Image 1 (cartoon, rainbow over the protein chains, first blue to last red):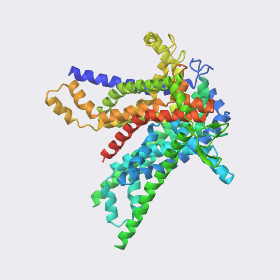
Image 2 (spheres, rainbow over the protein chains, first blue to last red):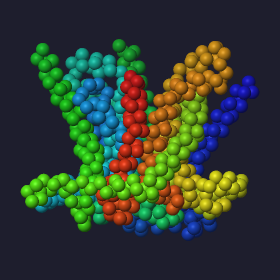
Image 3 (spheres, rainbow over the protein chains, first blue to last red):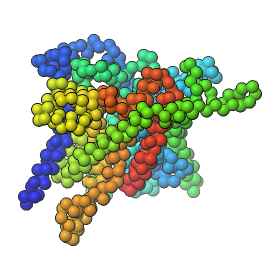
Image 4 (cartoon, one colour):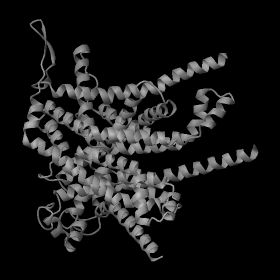
Length: 286
Length: 310
């Protein structure tokens, strides 16, 4: 009995310590964003002045706007490509070069970003030079588009994993039943499959959005003149040392993300409950 | 019959698009760039352009391969040391993540079932807040007067760390091997916990009962049943930490110091500092060669896990 309760308190302590480790830096960032001192980790009273100064921080605001646009397009593209790749992997067990395909889908998850960034940039530069000498017009120009390519490559890998996990848990009989009842393939997809994986698509969208919004290395390699994303602005300041404006931005991001995640999980939980009720009602009716 | 044929025709077209589109995208944006890097790593740099490998000279096709970068990288002590120390830091980080993360995932998976979704959510939540800012936060915690710096100094841990040679002086924690590994463990810990939890939560607990019925103590049952059964999770988690750590750039740049040599930073400096694209490519190619075996292991286990779910 004693051993069991001792084991339980070890478990509790370990979990508590782990969560403390994960969240302590975030808490510290938020607290010191209200610190009225130019030395960001010596407390000197409460202030909101760093937030006020953010409003005039042109560089940061321009970076944020660019990052938000790139993140939006990255999330949309990643979900489309990721869903296709997940379908290919789950529904088609045999096709030419499936092993290479699986490898290429999974590799960006772990591949160091400096390698992905460098190789993608050198490829795009080569393409640009080739088009320049062939048509007198180099494409693609380094900037928002090239950053998007890079983020899409990374986002697609994450989206595939999320959607694939959900597709594998689906009961294939539901799709077969719809097919037997005369639904066309696109109807099966739109009316049966899509509602069942909608939750996964939403998680994948949000995950790839935040990934893109956060990325430093790929953006640094792929950005061009005038295309400075918010993480690049933050990184260039953080490199030089502690900077209160970075803390203020961090706090705003944490705030927005926590609100977003809470709202999204509430919406997902409610949709799931309604779906279960519909299934139960349909079962009673039948 | 006609309907069936139409359906088959649609399916084959749908199938082609479903597989073809992501496939082509990955070939063009993932595989093709590596070939370009390989090519540039053996190319001459001429001012700002890169000389073509194949060129017609006096009517003969000349192939010029410049292998001097590779020769240089094997002979220069600094590169060798940097690769070695990148592997060392990545390995230490992986072991520490496993040591912290395995018990963590284990206790999560054995917590009350109603509590588990919340515990899982709490591990994933930091993913959603900026990784860059969380690394930056450690700068504040570890510089002089930071919370963690004060805590460690007050309980005398700095003597221990200094004796181990991972901090430069008493009370100085930043820009040292200690701060670098701490930052990497902190960043990659969730990548270790999540696959382990996924694995441990699925385990059939009746196997432990059977072990206990056969006379195994909980400790023996843990090492002979639980750990071997979670092998796939251990390997997946370790690769998810080890491979990206080798080429990590942001964490060494923000938390590391002059002595903490990391190859990601060298590549960055060759590219952005020296503008030497062939050398940066050579560094990248050698790095790919280093990670190709762990990458293959990761892919195999990832594929197995994905097929096994069904």
